[in-house]
Image 1 (cartoon, rainbow, N blue to C red):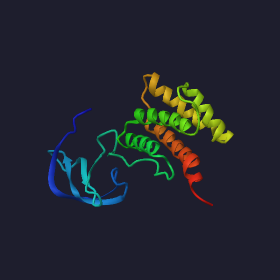
Image 2 (image 1 turned 135 degrees about the vertical axis):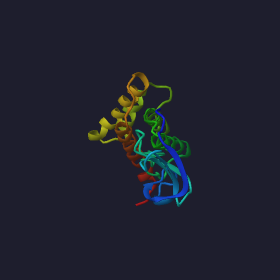
Image 3 (image 1 turned 45 degrees about the vertical axis):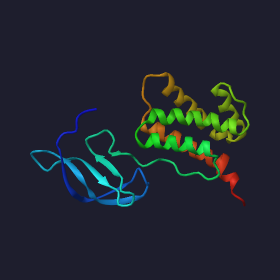
Image 4 (image 1 turned 90 degrees about the vertical axis):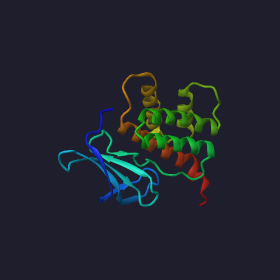
Length: 191
């Protein structure tokens, strides 16, 4: 990573800065924080803003590839999910929020296998078996390409050199969220 230019000015106050906190997920406007600015001008390279709700720091920068660290988590909490599946889903969301897109996709791939086994598929099979199982049991025919997208993107993350980009990770996370709602949340609600 390239060195952040400038120096940190710790006066404790910043211009009101709006962002969605990556820790508590609240949309906030922070006024407490510090700037990293140029030595010869007031150009700001980065801000560390303290969330007024949870008090955790967030880095906001135009200098880095990511403008916010940690980013807000993608996806929402899902009701009716077993503890081990919820834990892994939260891990996928957390990987995404810190920009670990390869890890998010790899974990989403593993999550598909665990969901399939939880819903009756045999353990110890090849991954394609779990994709087919979920597709035949829970996914409408016109949405089956989404399960395969997770398999194929997971294969890229596992076996190929290029990194998974933010957009692909976001698509995978969106589908995992929808799958969890379909398989767990909707059946857990009474009509």
